[in-house]
Image 1: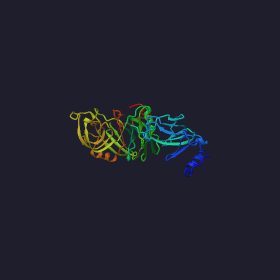
Image 2 (image 1 turned 90 degrees about the vertical axis):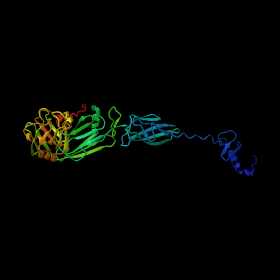
Image 3 (image 1 turned 180 degrees about the vertical axis):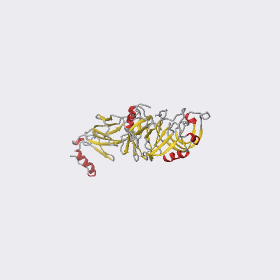
Length: 407
């Protein structure tokens, strides 16, 4: 064995370790084998060291940060590894089903806008080592959103007041309307088995088979979140809407156009009988059940708003007091001093129910929205397209059909 110089004791030890298989230089950056071998330890029988498998890389298709498009399936993939299992769940606990390959998982459906999803995956790297990955993403917001407004929003109403839900987008077609109705819930105390009926493509009403009982409460909730209107890119508003109102005394006014009388009952008892004048032959008062829509202490009556020129022989333009609207077609119960002489005797109005100032003020003071005004013995049928007459002039069997295909 050659002699090792004492002042190179550090190199001496390394040379002994390597068994003098070759010359080694040790610099500031470490040891480099000079005989051409890539591994300084290979000459002592240690052998090549295994290269660790690359880290598994996870990707979510279409992701921008933690947001993914709602209109595409959710796709979760890996490189430098394999997926052994995936469970994806929405924030509300609903599972999201999908299809799995060794390197990719894709949901079977598109997503719900603004919904948060958690992906739990079991993966293996190239060495077969297992690990767990949990990734959370949120679906993007929809650009077309259906909002609902419920009325009444609160307060005390008459026994004829329906629940009214209005939408800011058209809801048309039986399947679409049925899908929307499935997200509307009405709870009444006492319980009533009511039904919805579409007034038009933007509005739906709810009532029971008879007038509400005095003292009832009516609570309505619209929960449109997660609802996609069939065949469209429109989704329901994610924020639920709730409204509640109560029912007061049963005030019912019965207008007999042939007797020229209006008889008012409260909870079944007659409380006032009024002489009235209703519509003349040319402008008959519409028959059927009306509900009180608006109360105004003073109202401008302009015949042009109902298609009669103001300057024509039948025209009018005047303010009259104690006006209670019972139709959107222009019918009111109101005071009209000009017809007091024929009230109780002749019908001379343009379709309104004229009364004296005292009687009209009494009715104004005692009525509330949703009270019933039932016009009997009229030659003119009710207009079902008028909100004042749209609810109680259907039979219960007709009402329950819902109007799913019409309007």
